[in-house]
Image (cartoon, rainbow, N blue to C red):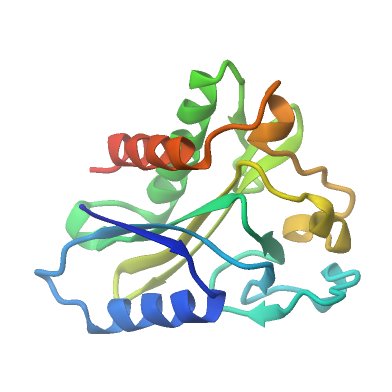
Length: 200
């Protein structure tokens, strides 16, 4: 598994790079995890309903090809993109979703936080509040897109949407659950380690 730490990347740039890699990869192409952050952006899934964007304001809304409804990305949120040959790894889409959810649940447990997944609404929740969103696209047997984990970010933009299509869904972050702000770099490395431990 190749790990790429990419820093702050414009959403459209990362989206195009994922599509190109997935389109051009072959049986020998190494699987990759990309760890990055995005400038503020709302992304709308392939079946996303416009009414779930309540008031975009100055934040751009980008229509993309993953599953799911609208979500928000911004600085202080780690995004982990999973570019994996599912057939080669013997993974189903559901198994990959579970692995990514379990990575966040394991990471949160290290901070003494109990988190759960919901099979009816992918992502990770703490006491009913969403702390990580998840959406994937599979093309030619390979996945892209992935996981967004709220570490220490401004949560106000989530009030401008129905997060993941659920009106009134509360969103939280690691910083909100801890007595002090976590170290973004440390949490990023913990997220990579947790994901690698869950993936074949």
